[in-house]
Figure 1 (cartoon, one colour):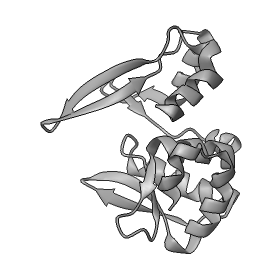
Figure 2 (tube, one colour):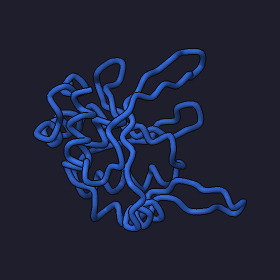
Figure 3 (cartoon, helix red, strand yellow):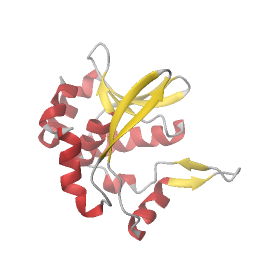
Length: 159
């Protein structure tokens, strides 16, 4: 809750209401979440349109835009890690969950992270969906890069 409240306080000017409690049932297991809902500003729609396109079947798909090169930095990587990242079960590497993208997009992302930030990553196949893996060789550099931006309640993800 502390992290969600921190994010809300920093983004409240974009929000249409106070955070609310969410509940979902996934594979028979109840999960709770805190939802932060934004207003429908035109510039947010423009940002959405950069990350979602229609495929040949007129279905919306998530993509990694080429502009990500200009946007990706240690601050962005830290928030991505806090929201959708975690240690491997062995603790040797770190996952950034990218299952909503296709493999081609995640390979592009791996290249951007390596070229721009100097972090060595690979793409792993988890149930036929791509997951970005920060290798053991780069984990220390990654942690040093993102730690200054991590909320204190999520530092456990870096241990």
